[in-house]
Image 1 (cartoon, one colour):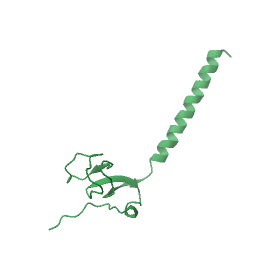
Image 2 (cartoon, helix red, strand yellow):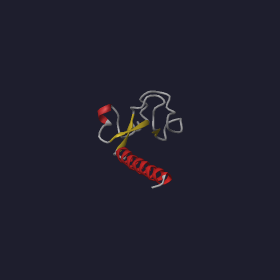
Image 3 (cartoon, helix red, strand yellow):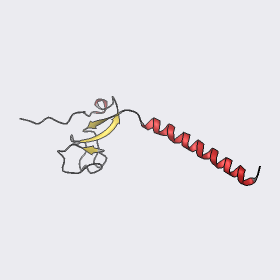
Image 4 (tube, one colour):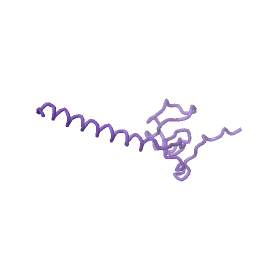
Length: 91
C-alpha cells in the first residue's frame, strides 16, 4: 500500500467516527422540551409572548418576567417555579 492510500484510509476513518459522534450528540439534544414562562433571568430568555416590548431571545430586561420563556426538559417547568401558560388577562 502506498503512503497516500494509507493517509486517505486514515482520514476516511476519522471522518466516519466524527459523523457517528455528531449523530449521537444530535440524538441527545433531541429530547422533548417545553416552553416555561416566568423562570428566565434578564437577558437569558429563549423568547417571549406577544405582550412583551422586545422582539425575542436574550432581550428580557427583568428576571422572571411572566411573559418570557425558556425551553426546559419536559416535565420540569412547574418544578422550577414556572408555568406553561401566560398570565390570564384581568377583566
